[in-house]
Image (cartoon, rainbow, N blue to C red):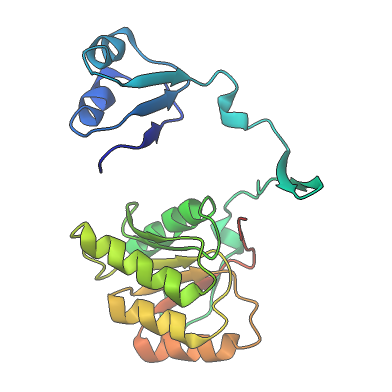
Length: 214
């Protein structure tokens, strides 16, 4: 990556500082920095370090969205991930690696602006498509981003913040190399999407909860 902002949720130590030092970034935000990390960062030109004393707003229960003439207050998406509430809806059960990929991707996609698609692989983010009016377009962008980074999507999990309204989005993910999918379910065409997953040999999980960040 080139430029941008890095945010961490724990005290940033020397080991992580050295990893970050291998790339170019302009801003780092953390609850705190060790003395060794600060010493290293102070050698960097034009690097800004910010300390978040409020815990990144984790205690805030609502989000505010401005609209012309006013604002909208809405509850934050604080639902915890509960794999026991997930439902495998395909003939094939996910492997252990696919489970880890899906749960990790579901945690990531929660924070991506809808329509959001995340490709993940064994607790790594491989590709992200965000903010598109078409879920298929989000998937295409995620695949493109993974390709630009030379990341292989074979055996990955595709994670969708809301249901696949048609089977085309899921089939596009299968073509890209995904072997597992996690999504809320709830489309009137769920049966078609499940059939497409079975025909493609994919394992698919319904969470019965959507994120849909705007």
